[in-house]
Amino acid sequence: MIKVGIVGGTGYTGVELLRLLAVHPQVQLTAITSRKEDGLPVADMYPSLRGRVNLAFSAPDKVDLTQCDVVFFATPHGVAMEQAPALLKAGVKVIDLAADFRIKDQAVFEKTYKIPHTAPQLIEEAVYGLPELNRDDIKAAKLIANPGCYPTTMQLGFVPLLKAGVVDAGNLIADCKSGVSGAGRKAEIGILFSESSDNFKAYGVSGHRHTPETVAQLQRFTSDKVGLIFSPHLVPMIRGMHSTLYARLTKEISNEELQALFVDAYKDQPFVDVMPFGSHPETRSTRGANMLRLALHRPDNGDTVVVLVVQDNLVKGASGQAVQCMNLMFGLEEGLGLNNIALLP
Image 1 (cartoon, rainbow, N blue to C red):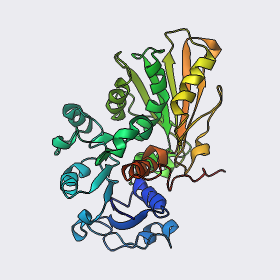
Image 2 (image 1 turned 120 degrees about the horizontal axis):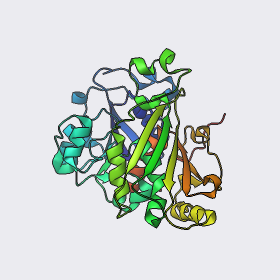
Image 3 (image 1 turned 30 degrees about the horizontal axis):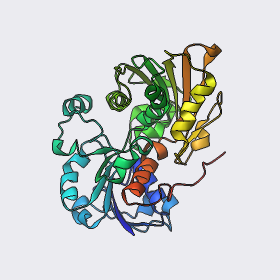
């Protein structure tokens, strides 16, 4: 059994990890930390876990995480970089769901997140945890930088086009929408029910922190300079993400050939569903599941290809993807504990 520790188990990605790992056949939940909720039974905060998780939250200084085989950090940016070095030295594998190790350029990270990086020696060692693009590296990794939710949709939507060299890499557009849970479990005016319900708004249009991460990863798949316009939006639902991606075709290619690029790219990927050309994937078709669905469109058979991508921002966009990485790191079947079907209605 894999002994698992979770740092920061009180937030939405933390409880999503608990939901998935509590029924994972090869996992033993060992420690769940929270300084504020020290001593509180996990099931008292999250009644959905009654009878499944019998642990209580523990203050970080009361548990020895070096006794774990792997530790997940479901924490704000900056926490994992402080604690990861000691854990790695003790032989513990680390999966960070925040952004501490996603960006390889330290200066870009510090400019984007406005905090100093305290473990720069680990930046190169960290493996970007997007299994569909980095599976072999993840299998050998000791430190995983779990991708952001928006970047997951953008990369899986754009990469087949960039690898084939059929689009203008310098003029990519991503129009993305996320449920309110993507903002985290916190008291903030913009995500209060009376503020976000019956409302729809864009944010971070002039510069979002996921842009450098996404551009750097996309750049790996083309020799042309990547240019990305990314516009995120908040929609009045709890969970779910819909990204509408636009790219201009630069080569003659049929719709059948476009579809084949994606079918071939993801034919062996258990958590990517390439739907028939012209389909309209819905966020509810992925709710609660570690599945990403996408479909291609080509308006008026012109020179623009549109990729529609949906996922659950808390599962494939965060905690499910982290568990997928854990399975690979420990030589388990990749979908172990993740093959549940989406909730509908």
